[in-house]
Length: 200
Image 1 (cartoon, rainbow, N blue to C red):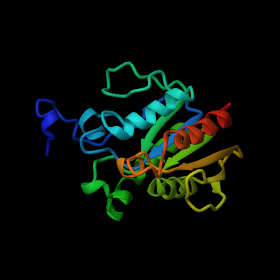
Image 2: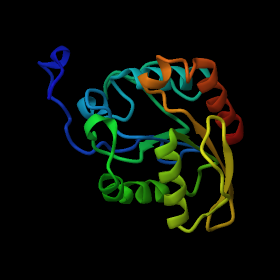
Image 3: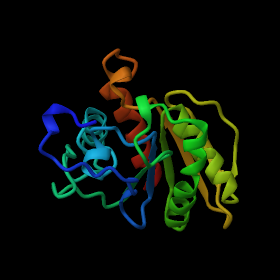
Image 4: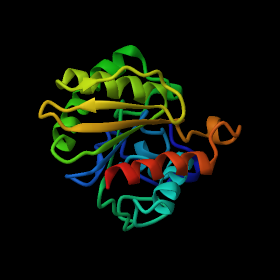
């Protein structure tokens, strides 16, 4: 159902593809398209408050051309970053079911093939993204050291060709986390700055 503020807009309303570089050094995995964000605009983390937080932070640490992401034609560029999600269609109540996660697993498998030759660091936003990312990497033949999810958590993944890649965790920049102070701008900036440093 459309939100009144967007009543005159055509919603994308389809699976949302990954966005950013085709040869990234930083790969970011979120949860799912927001009903009135990426599901509306057709671009990951675009057109909602979670996207405002993520792109604001990416810009502050030098990973995004702009500090906002409002539409597919807004001029935003990610030279070294690619953004995707564990689930590619907007789930009811932002809570993807086990079936939805399984149905979208092929998207992550495809994304891993895209990022594998160049990626140096992976950032998972939220516990669902953390588990989905580690599982997808293992399915693709990566060796992944075990680590529990927590903001700032870190582990290593080794690609089938033997390259070591750092995997970092952050709380998701959802309103549930940002409005309550569970995730602050400095906390998100810290994780993404670590990603930037690890990618260089």
